[in-house]
Image (cartoon, rainbow, N blue to C red; front, side):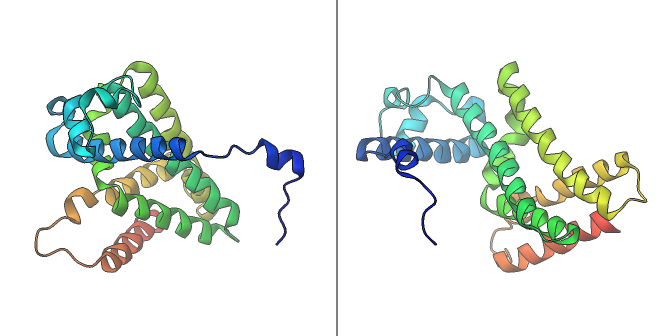
Length: 209
């Protein structure tokens, strides 16, 4: 398919330089390392120097990307909430019907739960460490995400009250977000495909029973 970008549009698309790509990669590496360290040691148990060491730079070099440790935590939690919301909106745009939409929402959340278990732990334990503005932003993104689920459920289950559907959605999130514990059984962890199938089946049943 030919590009729909005109010459003026193409000129307006930013071109990443090698330096900007390296900076973006280093920022992403810091966030990934921070999620792991915060999950393992807790937010209070990790220093800027620890974050630098984890990605092979000095502690002060981290400040080139973030003004402080609190900003790192905010970026992790805001980024995860925004990614969940953006992904939900993409799958809803593509779903041919409401049942497919719900199954796609479940699969999207399972992707997050299996791929970002450390972030789930950090969210559960450290949300209150954020300042009020950052915490409000995370909560707002999460509410918008939940409302997409409730909207789909309300069309699939018009016989159920909205409050019940919202409760079911939150219960499903609790099930799916259990992966930091349920999917990390040392030496006895099922294959990802098995875990995915179990989670998707149980989430569907909890929402539609």
